[in-house]
Length: 114
Ligand code: 5GP
Ligand code: ZN
View 1 (cartoon, rainbow, N blue to C red):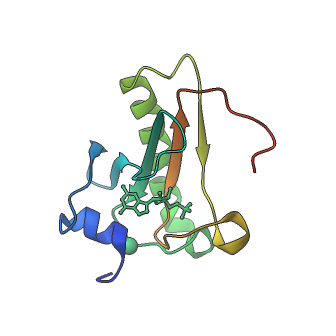
View 2: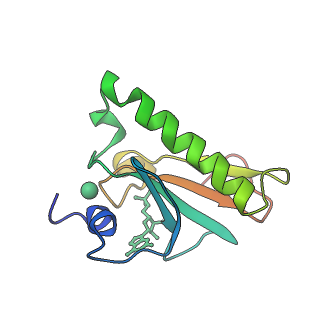
View 3: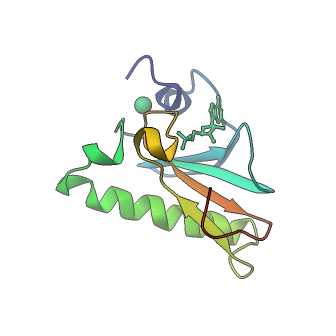
């Protein structure tokens, strides 16, 4: 999608600070990190919100979650722990409408989240 920020990262029009890539998934550091490690894992396919997922996307979502686990190991936080978050629409604070999994680590997380 031409006016989507994260599609521009996929195409390379805006170069991301990449930490992981495969044929279906791209991951890069968040521009405004909320923890010492804050990575966004996105599908290369444009999907606006979680509400737009269909059955064909099931393997892709699995790839996103597995990519997050791989990055956590790569960054050395797999044993200490990490949080994954997927925000959907206004009440969750979604601000970029191309689905993305937040991978947060490197500090103690709190519950419930804000
Ligand atoms: P949301 O609020 O939609 O769940 O998360 C969007 C995330 O994208 C935010 O954490 C925000 O900091 C991040 N973000 C917004 N613009 C950019 C950008 O240009 N580059 C990167 N790397 N992250 C961005
Ligand atoms: Zn997009």
